[in-house]
Length: 83
Image (tube, rainbow, N blue to C red; front, side, top):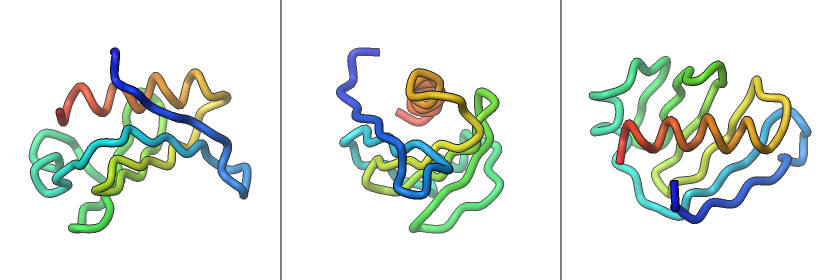
């Protein structure tokens, strides 16, 4: 995917923070995803073996991954479904 994204280890070292720099309508995204939680402010979904908390700004917290590459792979898989 040629989308510009950044990834970094979050301060608590329990997740990676990925920013896709794109606005996402969480309610619309929830219609195509099997979500665990959805509100206008956060969407939580399991995808590609990871747990992702997605925010309307395109910011994601990616858990249950081992490194930045896995976090990016999970984030890209999610974005392919909602964008």
